[in-house]
Amino acid sequence: MPANADGKVVVFFQNSGKFSHRYSTLGFQDAANLDDGDMWPVSYALSKRSPTVERKVAGLVKAAISLPVLRVSRAGRIRTGDLRDPNAAR
Image (cartoon, one colour):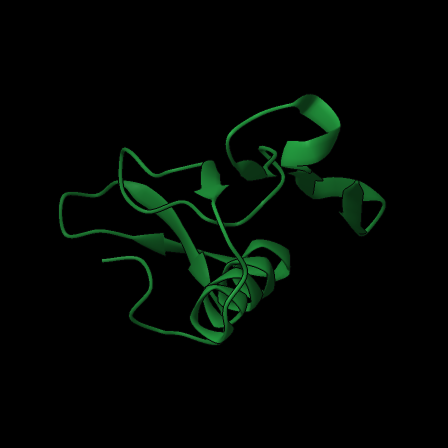
């Protein structure tokens, strides 16, 4: 089940029951704004639903659809960050 932002798919969910897997998968496409340095996760295994898991998923989805802002690091590298969190791209 994909979700869109500005016409681009940014997040998808694969139900464990539908695919006969041990866990469900929450994944993010390259349009998602989750960049964190040189490496970051793009999918998560979900074994059961809980309030804690729901908060984490909500935070990830909000970050994924946020507007990116370009920043220049001390080394002169251009990085992206979240407009709502000025400390997101360090």
